[in-house]
Image (cartoon, rainbow, N blue to C red; front, side, top):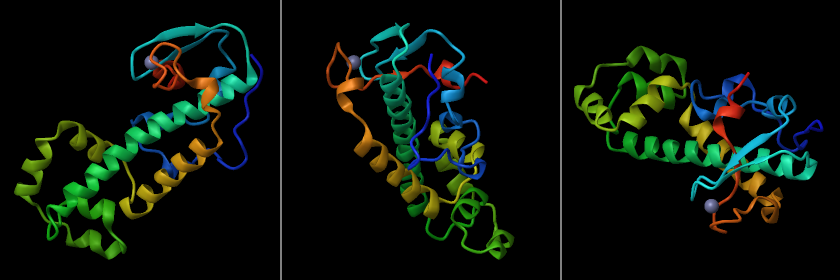
Length: 181
Ligand SMILES: [Zn+2]
């Protein structure tokens, strides 16, 4: 399989931008792709799956970008839910809210327990996991992820990665391959 190169306009995010334990940890997935002969791909919309045995540089590059878009869209959904959740508790100084929205370090000293916030968050297990397992500042991360998606979608040749079965979904590389080290 030929070496894949990420476009210059979208450098791999540095570690501070990576959400720990989240699918966004697929940093520089090309490095993994180069090591495998067959690339398992899947359509998240309909479940269509196949394995690409023939190297195709432009298709491989499009798949890397479509997979980034897919994982970034998942993260964007969680970030938007985070924003909506925090808005429900404007006065809360709960640790998870302060640590992800603070503008100054001194705000960390104002952290206070907030049982109502904590109970409401536990009612949304996936959001709870996202907030407890990741490190980010919401006011910076949300527009960054949104801009990444816009840029990647603008440059992606959709004709290369459109699902042949449902024709509305977009093919992506299977998570298991991307998270391999
Ligand atoms: Zn499909």
